[in-house]
Length: 452
Image (tube, helix red, strand yellow):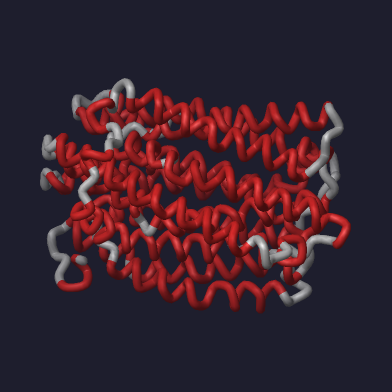
């Protein structure tokens, strides 16, 4: 059944609202495909790899994603500044932001490439990722391949920020869908060929991750966004400070996000063993279906909130927040139903190849429920750049999450569930200030730190 707030959008003459509905409708189909791919690919992974090698693959892949923190928040800074410049009709300024962001991230990528391959001479990645000695050579080769293919993609994926800032996040979702479908095909072909080498898997999937954004850059910057295409002549490093001003906040928030979730696989692998990682990831993928579809709805609002705030359309913002909260109630009920059915779903989905503890599912469901409601307020605050309190919370979480995760995971009654419990406890702290801050901003009563 179509949520009531979408029905209202469909009947609305509001251009901003209509664009959001269009993006939700386009994104919904893509998310269905992504979800189906996520369902199908896990059994294929389990058939292709052993439980231990699959756990190592997940752990190394997550660790490589840590490089995302080195964009210094420039990606999200570009998202906000591009949206602001475009809303004001200053296309030259928007183009300068794009070129400057590409130049800066490209320079960071080159530096990280040199740094990694210098360190690679001295590091045995098999030992670092707690792999059995028999897999050390494969893990070393896999890590080098994943990093070498990830770093160019690190720059090219800025195209997703450009289309999202233009209130077209479904186009970004289309890139993700292309990657997911191609990766599913690759894993299927590797399984048919009985090719279970981790380096070969890394080359296939890492190559797909790079090829799709490369093609997207060619398509978009030679077409709809030709006016904003990256050019050396348009680079202005004075604008880098503008991007980093708000980007620095996003940099810390991204760092907190990486610490909270991207370290989970590594913590589980080190504390409990890599064979415990697959169950954690299966639970995460299962419940993230609900979170992903809710994100489909909230994502278009980031730049829409920016546009509305620049134009002082506070009534529109208040109305949209209320409607999003109604939709969140449906998500919460859906997550609880998913929890009740989880054991039966896993049995059908994985053919009893993997056991997932109920306590892990319980905390994962709660994490998704509370992440979603706080995502509403976080999207508004991110869109309008009022993130000082959120920044203070993120700094606190970065300090306490890893030791808390390790401590809780050490309890036999919790195991890997202790890791997501630590993330949940840190998340709940935002309930004490984000809703209040959003209310003050929407009613024009925010003062001091509440308005920063």
